[in-house]
Image (cartoon, rainbow, N blue to C red; front, side, top):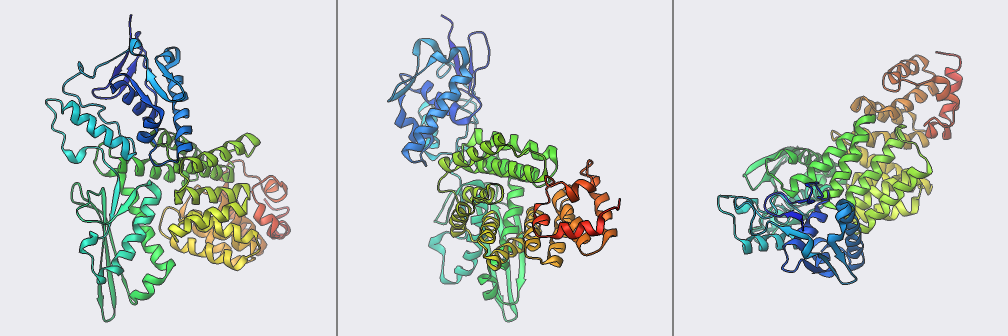
Length: 525
């Protein structure tokens, strides 16, 4: 009988007897099949598999993830799905239908070479299995390159800390929170930790102020990934101001996250995670139709590899941003898909603060579920009071409740913190929309101008500026902006802008600015 072949030495692969590739895309699907193929009788209990691949999940969630993964595997195996068996307690591969290269494969290739799954239990199993099999002859892979738990060391090891280290630790901790939010890793500060990234802050206080130096260090190569410094006249004010401390730390973290994918560490979970998220964020924040669409593919790939709720929430947010820009139709099917993404994200990562913040953003802006958004945003802000997504969501929720001054303060905080980061245009547009609702015309114009300048393809701020300038009886400025908008929105039409209620100018319409704009622009070209 010709058998389905499992390649366990080197890159994990499955081939049908005819040579057809049957390897599933998802990393956890590969890991599950590899664990079955490498076991003595090709059988494992469901609970054992759940503990190795979803150790951070509650038992109900882990069971659901296992069921979903088994469905994906059977789909990949196609006509050969009969090699995989399962009942209520166990999962197995049919011994008479498969063969492996575990003891006869290429001796120069490592067991499951390059397969990295971000679960410490799987990592421990993989390391033990490699030790049991013995390192193949001819390989010189250093221990530092082996898969391990992904951690960030915030500051000096705790056993070296003293009272005068508290102030630098505040900065370390704030930067560490922002970085970990985006790549879903753990922070630690203990002695001799084998961290993937080290954050180190030094503060030198003098009579006329203090100098703050931050270094983000790659401990594997002892290289500085990013460094920044600032001088403050009053250190106490700096450390106690959410806005000032938040802006400095956010920019340090944002630039660090941008640079992490460039570290030359093959198959490093830290690099893979940061690479996926930063690539997707950059694409969405271009506000270019093609780039925004391709961000969805990046996030699908990230979810296949990492199976984390953050990536699903970010996909929902990316789709919401596309709807706001007019690149995606807001129909029942799309809304149902976005809602399902948020529900699955919560199921996969119920304790993830960034997932909660991104979900809150979508709930507030797209679905107008303001109470749900407020609850999620507050949950995220308890962990990180400078989470931009959560600040925006809470601002929208407060405004819907009529708590306008609180909404304004929250929006202003997110705008201030995001300055110079890739989120600056997004946060300024949000602040502009709120200021339009509050009839703060000059501030709305200023924020819309910042958003338009920072992102040349961003349509929304230009739409706001056309109406705002027209409402101020500045028709020449509005006409200039219309011509500018036509370069990126080639089908722009002034009549539609002024009179079609389906055109995305709801905030201008509700606040009365569009009525004033009609009086200025009607009959002009």
